[in-house]
Length: 558
Picture 1: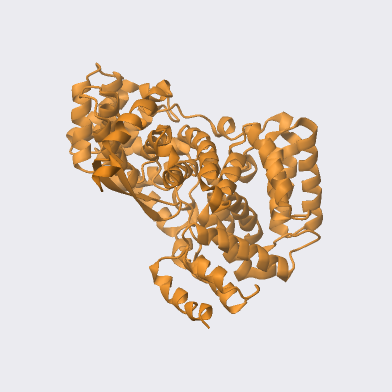
Picture 2 (picture 1 turned 90 degrees about the horizontal axis):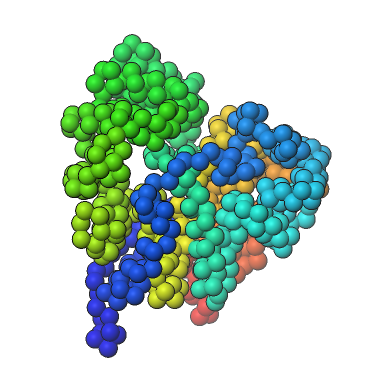
């Protein structure tokens, strides 16, 4: 970099954004950025967040996501608000109609949802109507009406509609990139903050990404074979091994119930039971996770003394990842005297083993200057390493720091990065559970239910859901139970929907989608031949699609 630029590079870092655009960002930070950018601004905001080191109290899904689809999907009437009877009745009919391919029932459901939205200005109902107009179910597809409904829902605090609008902003005209990405970043920031408070993200689930049900044009049978839940023979054998006293099997069985792995239904009580039984046998990983459960008070009465005991045993037994929990307890004086030096030592032990949570907490220490000399540059390095490892709290932290810097916000590419980071965190919220229910429906042969749930997630901006919904339309045709304006979707309606979904997925880095969209324009498959749009689509894919781009070039010189 030239001297005339008045910039001295502090360091360069490669940041990989998972699950959003599947791309790398090369970040060049100067001393000026640190002194005039996020150094002075970001740490003065949200003091409560920083005092708690990004550890927020988990909130129930009903509070974070009012009008959530979860109660009807889990058939759990105990969490239904009596005041929302009409709304949930209509939502249940909508899912049933999609499952059966019943147009009349869908029509009835949409009328009821619209009544619920109009009568009480109920945000979740407006959000569903936005989905209806966006899809064109029993109503003509209308982007303006869809946006208006989502706008009403978002103004009422509906997180799902905020995601829809933010996603629409980042798809708009590139000539307005800066304004649109700034609007998207603000909305995604609100949703990401809520996601950090969700139960799913607070327990650091290892399974956060929706699963793709296909490989190219074929069904991914290997993935689906492993998702039979409690009826899966491997899980039955694992649980049997746990019952006869195998400590490793006890731990793994607890994980299945705790994180709802492979289609096993979440059961907090069973998870804690199996972790506790494994601890009795000296199983170190169970000591660690049980310690974290007691520290967080998730499904059990919070007990810092028990948490400290479990984590100490695990750490002394050689499980280095347990030092993260111990460091946090020392940092806050929970169950032990507050000791910043010991906290830092614990986090350093974990960071040496490249545990992203240890990196994150070290970053917070340097950012706040607790137990160490304040060093924003060093803090940023730790946050970037943890972010590259996929830790949501670190992604959120980097996004906040970048977003707060006045100079950095003027850079359209930086705003794009900020929006991408916030989006990645936002997608971990409780609304991501739609993916689990869509997958379960598909595994059980309920293609229509799977399609409508993936379609809802597609609207929220989930690339995997866009890909899955498009593939279902292509693979199953009429059996997709796709409902259109006046009945089951016509062949034309299905193809148009599938193309739109593949296009969105391609814009988010899906190579197969980019190939399909490019071929549609290049060969005129359902679309008028357009070599410019074909080239644009091919270029959304990885370098491997260069051969498709090269074959277009002669068309421009003929």
